[in-house]
Image (tube, rainbow, N blue to C red; front, side):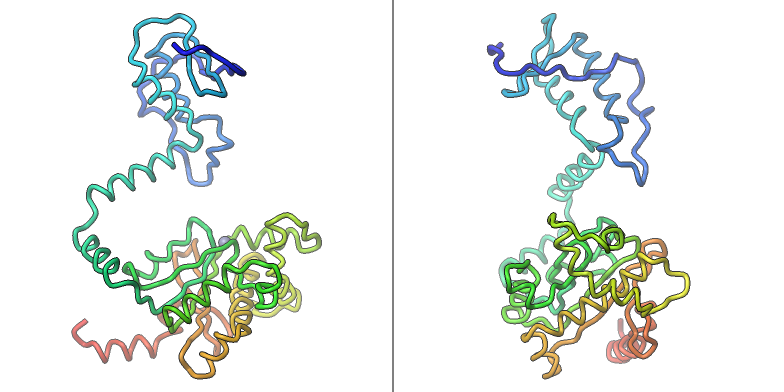
Length: 318
Ligand SMILES: [Zn+2]
């Protein structure tokens, strides 16, 4: 056993309760695992505790766990149990790890072949999608996109800063993605996709009178024009709450900001680029698109009716 040094921290092991693991309450949608004291991981802690049957102390600095009444145990197994037991948000992260491990083992051979081909030949995406970081927005799934078809840029609130803001010491991630997408990859479409129940929009509303100078507040300043449009009651859509209406206005705002970038403007003028405003309704699980003639967001199949019909005529076999 190594010598202990530094601060010794007692691991909060709950009393052992004999209980099968499947009786654990799974995390529900909306649960915040960080604010839920262990939940079903508690049970793993119990099981780990039972296996060892002793009180444990951990050295915070060197990460060593020692037991007060030593007896013969499988230390490797013990460490594995205790580390898994006390990882915050373990259930969700464990699923991701399992998913990645499963991908490594069982990925579809056609997908592997396609990725290999893309690695060898390079990517030629036709579209840049700018959307929010929200975990419920699933770009590849809701557009049924294969790898290599779409560049994706995500930020809180799918904002596009004005070019001046990007150049004068502001965030350059959008400007640089535009340069890369347009000048290097020659993309032909840019889609800005907002979504319902956007936490970024809720925060923008909450801070409308007080943009503090933290990172989030600074970034949310990109939504000030959308806020103005909300005040002047543009895009009044029946049944939309304020957050969702602001989110739709913000899509239009980002499209407008895009058009101020010279490389975007030049391609729009030459008709080499098309801008699209989309909005993902999470509750309804529907993708909407802004229809300029109607002046509102409608389901994509209606917004692109002519395009889809033309596509069907040109590809009767599909
Ligand atoms: Zn969002």
